Length: 335
Ligand code: HPA
Ligand code: ZN
Image 1 (cartoon, helix red, strand yellow):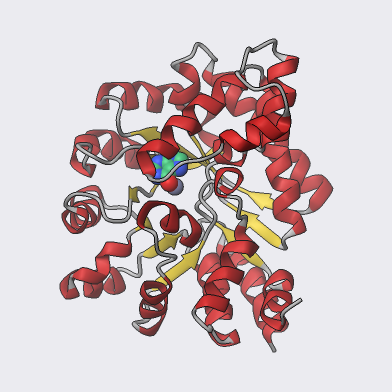
Image 2: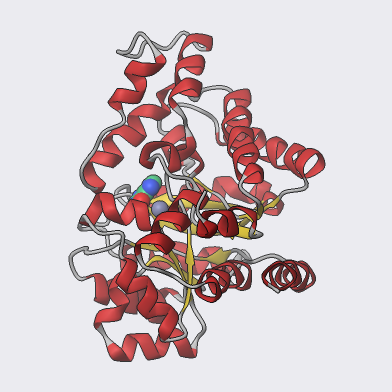
């Protein structure tokens, strides 16, 4: 094993940009299709695996939503989340803020309550059994209407204490941040933290990031690579200390590049960038694989890798006390 890989594997880390539905591994998909009597056009785990192919965000999203058809019962969401928490624990992820996409389930007739209760139960068990702490973020699907997002926000209120923040994902084309201005304003009133995808190389990416900051008031930006194209935007992101949750292997699927130079540049400029896996079952790379590819490709120093881990905790929405403990773990490790 390379020295870099060994250093990354044992480094304590947080993951803040991870779609739980994107952790659906072929073997679990196959098992759940069987358990729920859902017909899928594959007769083996290998065939499911072979179906996980895509070449851009749009073709990825088709497979991603199709895969969810096997998630029906509360227990399915428990199993999905628990499998990710075990994997995360095995990679020395000590804290995570996973996303979930309620509308991708409620639109198929699965009750909001089943989704959130299954995930919550896994969060409780994962903390007790594995010691991994997690806080859940609810994403709105930006290719659905603002009204549907508002209804989803209202459906979440009985579970307010189980959800730390809201985000925005799915297809950004024609679905700018401003479409959801009122929904995010209401979410803020309800006490939710705010983040939002500003995917790489979208139409008007830079404008979307400005609007996410100035008009929506996000506390983090998911992806946000294109911010580097605008010096004033870089300065504003730094002034507000906004974190950018970047996903190298996911970026490679969308743009052909791991965005190594962009991530190095963000670190150089003192921007709060951190590394994440996005949809690891589909992209076949969990957090450590993302970090190893990035660090080896870019010849990152231990100090650069350590800064990425520090940023992952600094950007989190956990308590200041927990943050202090996690940061001390990073410093102890790197010393
Ligand atoms: N981008 C947008 N929407 C998503 C993604 C992504 O990478 N993963 C799951 N939903
Ligand atoms: Zn994402």
